[in-house]
Length: 209
Image (cartoon, rainbow, N blue to C red; front, side):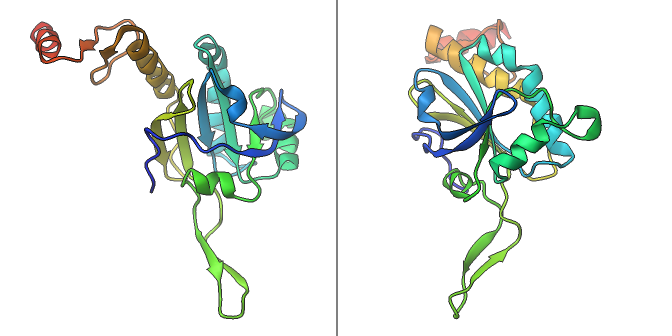
């Protein structure tokens, strides 16, 4: 598994569904330069754990936007699959009401570039393509700063849903660091004390806690 933290986030150009039902061509990550991005991958449309995550991000969408953060979801499904799922009501297993972009990684290159693609593929002696396991994405999450650099990543196995509040907390920690130059200790939350990145600053923090 590659660690992308500290590196530029791989850009992409793909089809996507935006605003809950509009299919667009040439959706790129680089269009958000100057904004923060939470880019998350999920395995499949029309499944069970995935809609709980997609709705959880939607419920916190205004909190992300108030912090200048764009939320973008990605799976290896087609844009038409995304669109169909978005038209289905929640009580019928759909994700109607989700408004942030859902990117169609149908050729698997985005998932591969972020190293969250499940399964291996190659060619046999006859030149035929072979694959081991389904070529879908793990539950990867990447926090990208205003310059397009990955500052945080988390990858969960397929059955394990993520904590959206933790993603928001990491945004707060990064923005606190950028604004105040202070580092954030374990379990830090917005409004709590942080630490100066010096020996004296850390010692003072520890003496108070």
